[in-house]
Image (cartoon, rainbow, N blue to C red):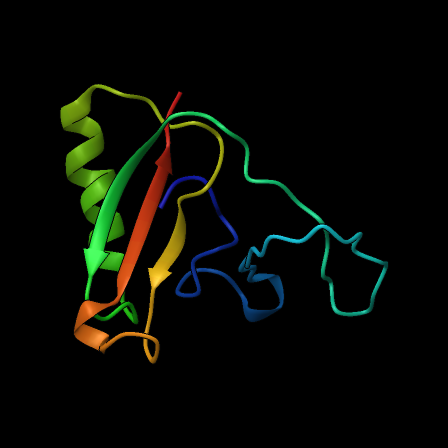
Length: 107
């Protein structure tokens, strides 16, 4: 997928693979040995796709955004990777009721 040549575990050597996780904090992130760094999801327009149910395989939904939604929309990608927000998830809700929003940044 675009926007992340080191984010696909099928094509990236394990030593180079990168997965970003995001949490909100008001505290500074101190230097550490775990490669935890401060970052920011930039504001801007996004295509959003809500996925209900299991979230252990979001690839089909992401591919739908890239392969179907994006070309049909006439929009262009922004230089930032697709990201997800877990709105509700198991075990807080039944697995079938879990909600994940996928965000595809647009120019």
